[in-house]
Image 1 (spheres, rainbow, N blue to C red):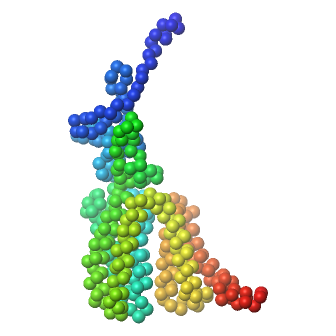
Image 2: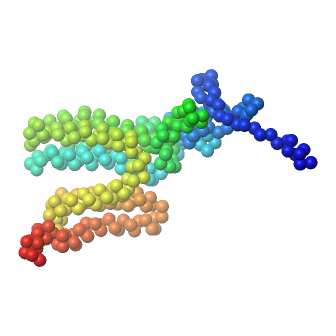
Image 3: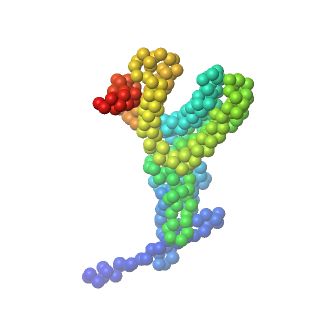
Length: 340
């Protein structure tokens, strides 16, 4: 009786085989000993089958731009709206060139130049127009909205590292923008920023920067020609890391720059802080960055718990002023020279 049951058991050897379809796309199938094709899902994390005329193709490959393979390994159109955290990330990447523009304009404008404010406004206009144009050109075209695919894990940003090799010889290339359009929209925005800067800023600086020497007028523009390629490489290589780390980067940088500015400006009391309007502008700008970082970390999932965190925004500035008299460098040096 047991021998009869064993006769029905057959060991079938299964092995992967590459096939080439009529449209020259590779397909991964499983074949048994009898050569009959068996059902198999697409290999890898990001390979999928394309929907064509309501039917699913048998070939596994890269999904078209704006689509991503779902759980059934079928390419599906990205129609979701970005989450709040995604918008905050895009806002952070959009702020980087603007903040760098302002920094170098202030750095090279000089104290006697009256053109710094107008250059600041022009930089803001360039970045603002670039952001609007980029959003209008992104799917859906002509609308101030974005259709995207949700970010699920860090590997979604680096699909080129996850091209499968089922037979360990041939590689099925499924590199795509799985986080559409969070990866390319930033690069497009930087391109528009650069083009608008080259069209507007040289003419403006040439006319109004009369307080600067001829060699110093365009230094802020030259600086932008350096930091835009750096930002592009940073997004291309480290976009996924920045996506998860940007809230902490904002908090750390805003705290460090605020401390450096207040120490360089010798701000030790509230009277020194409110003595100049420029200091108040810098202070409120850092407070906005603090609030931006806190909102990005909390994501406002629970408003009743997350909103009170904004009360911590003035904390670093108040702590600095309260402890400045204990950490004054001149006082420490004088006490050391006296032998105390």
